[in-house]
Length: 269
Ligand SMILES: [Zn+2]
Ligand SMILES: [Zn+2]
Image (cartoon, rainbow, N blue to C red; front, top):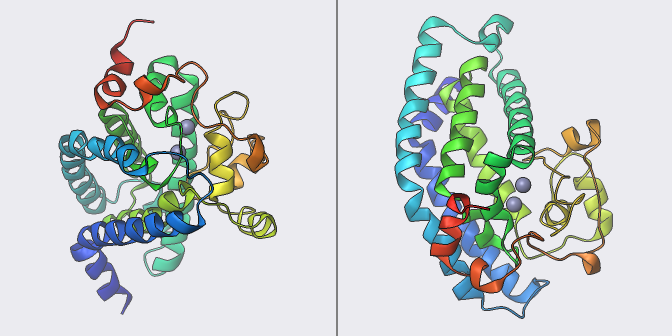
């Protein structure tokens, strides 16, 4: 049964991921239209600029996608990576949970590096420069960051020996969590206290998109919020105090223009 499931995810997982992304995006977009928090912006124009990054990210996505297939096949053949030593072979659910937690910790480390290393921040800044955070902000990722992010994931996958089906299943879960975290929407505070105890919610990720430090440098978590709690980077901020963007790049002409955004990492400053 589990073997069939692993086979199904390895074979159809990527198509399912794409289908889910489009469907959840559509649902989230419509929820925002009546239950959003910010309405005074040109939503379609804003989404158009962010969605342009889909095209610039195709080559990196494709090449690193191939690298994931090769690395996971090589690791499985040579039984390379610490997950093979822990021997969860007969317990795929345990294997999935342990791999998931490890990869999520990897995303947390990666995210801190993107903020703390200046040469990396200039790429990640493009995502943060959005003056309105809504579901389309998920797409706003400079191709340079796309390559850096996938290379880091590739490194964690290589070190751990993550199985291909585990990786794809994690990405399917990430479709829900990243789209949810970026929605122009707030969940009730009492629910945020419960869900946010373990998971990153829109309320928590919005604090990360606040225009000023120390708030920008908090809530780094990808799916889980536990790392922020463990390492002291967890913060809350009331909705009325939130201002989205980056204090050094607040000009609307710059933030709403694809070409200017694309050039940010290559500008001398
Ligand atoms: Zn960030
Ligand atoms: Zn974000």
